Image 1 (cartoon, rainbow, N blue to C red):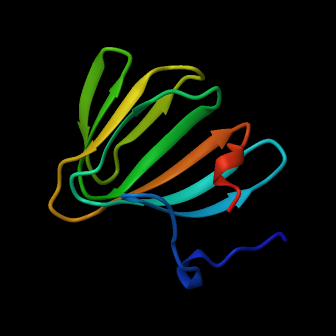
Image 2 (cartoon, helix red, strand yellow):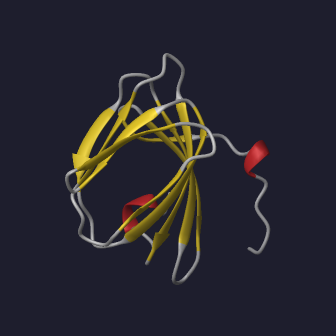
Length: 108
C-alpha cells in the first residue's frame, strides 16, 4: 500500500494507555499515538525515534534531560537511549512518532 487515510482509521490499543495508528515501511515507521491522561512510561529500544506533539502536554526525559513538550514541540531520541514519557495534560496527548528501523511490536 502506498496511501493511508489515518483520519478514517481507528486507533488500536497497543497496551494500557497507548493507542496507535501505524504505517510501516522496510526502513522506517510512522505512528500516530494517543496517550491517555496520566500515562507514564520509562524504557529504551534499539530504534531511533523522532516525534512531534500534536496535542496535549507531555514531560519527556531523554537520558537526564527533561522538558515539558506541547503542541508543535518536537524531539529526537537516539537508539538505545533511556527515556520516559508522562502525560501532564488533562486531555490525551497526541504524538506523531517516526522510528528507524521499524519497531516490530508496532506492526499492528
